Image (cartoon, rainbow, N blue to C red; front, side, top):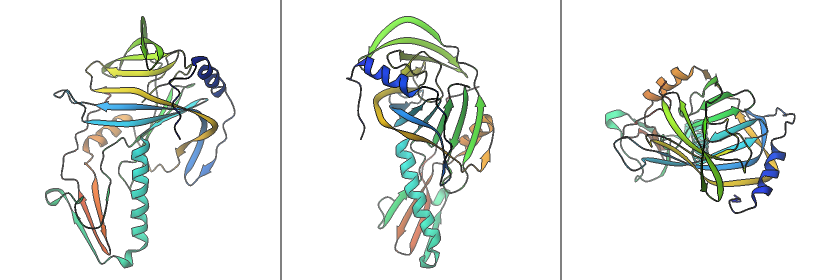
Length: 295
C-alpha cells in the first residue's frame, strides 16, 4: 500500500529520512539473479512526461519509482517491469511446452499487424514505458544503467563515473505539493535543466541520473520542455525493503554504444496465444527514440 506523505509534518519526514540515510553495512544477497545492494525506507513516485518539439502535448507519460537507500538508489518503471516479467514467464512456459504448439506464425515488418482484437490471449512487449533501471551511488557519483528492453534476449549494462553536477542554486523559491522548494539550474550533456528541490526532505537524490542538491528534487524539466519529472507521492517504508540489482547482465557496453543501440531498437512485439496456435508480430508502428543526453 502506498502511503502519501505530502500532508504530514516536514519535521517528522526529515527525522525519518535522516535515520534512513545513515551509513550502515550493506548485505549482499543473491536471490534468483538478484543482488541486494542497499535497503530503502523511502520511495518516491514521479510522473515522467516526454514531448516532441513539434507538439504541445506529451506523447508518453509513465509513473516512475525512486527507491532511496543509505547510499544507493534505484529509479525504474514498476508498471513496465511487472508487464515484462509476466510476458517473460509466459514465453518461458511456452518454451517448456513446445510439444503442445501446433502452429507458430511470425509476422515481421510489412506483414506486421495488430493482434489485440484476435481471439485468444494477447501479450505485448511493446516499448511503451521505460525499460531502463538506473542505480546511483550518491557517495561515489557512480551510475549503473541496466536495460532489458530486448525481451528474452540480452540485458545491457553500462557504468559511468559522473562528475559532480554543477548546479547553480538561486534564491528563487516556490511551494510545490506543500513543500518549500528552491530553484536550481544545470547544463548537462547538451541540455539545460531547471529543478526545484526541498531541504525539508534531506536526501541528495532525484529522478533519472539527477543528484547532488541539498535536498530531494521535487520537479525537474529541460528548458525545451521535452522531458519533465514531477513528484506525485512519497511512501514512508516502516520496515526497510531491499533494493534489488539484477545479476543477469549479458552485454556490457559504453553509454555511446548503448544510445546507438536504442536508436536502432524496434517498437516491440505482440504475442497471441490461442490453444496450440501462437502468433508473434512486430508492432505495426515506428519506434521514435529521442535521447535525453546529446553529448
